[in-house]
Length: 358
Image (cartoon, rainbow, N blue to C red; front, side, top):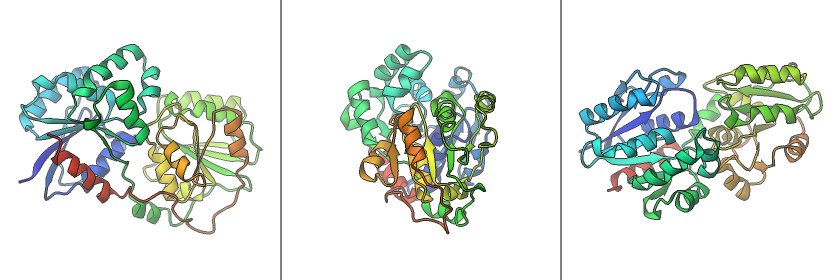
């Protein structure tokens, strides 16, 4: 008998949490599990990643306040054995409404960011810290993408150790490298950098532009992504005189050839969990320069300093970028990503968690 699992997403936007969940759904063992999706709003470019055998319930209510009654109703109607949610505000809402859900349903929540950094950045930091501490310990399982995040869940949020499981982000290295087989590189002699993520304060592209202005004029930066700060970032680049040195490439569902052709991926984030862009760049052979606030990537830097350089925003980050020498790769470079991220392997681990989270 297969176990029915409902995965909850806000939308099919091109974020890391959405991509992780969709990759896990695709790799989950269908002999043991019957996954289904419930989305608050079915719009977004990642809808193409939904496997054809997965039923999708679109609540057509982008705001959680309006969607929550419909979400509870959908779960009561579908009666899954387990529910997996992956974004903090939805996690808290589901845990707070647990008494209205089907009896016996297991609630598995996946945390997407380091609480010590993400909660203070929330518009209502004290409220969300209180909500996390009140409701997260009630989850059957809290999934964390790094050891550091697991430690914060216990130390700061009060989740019992027995309810925490570490689950790394899945990365289809073989598929990425097949797409990146012919590296794509911006023309010119200087260093070529890439960055990727939602154009929002979290990702720190505003401070990256300020730091990038200090580099030699032959350096070039391509930023992939879309988001609410797009116009402000473009205006900032113009004020800094970077229009000829920075390209805003918009959202690209498969930027991996550009990662493979770059000298490094830059991660100037103010907070993260385990950034997918960094893992994907490493899989394509591109090293990463990241701020210490960039979540679990610090654990990669500790064991593989040739793959990830940590540098504080400001002069240290500028120095790390300036140390990069531009050199067009002759072909696809070897992967710098450690083993263990293959989707089937990560999904098998998730399957074990789902089957034993009573």
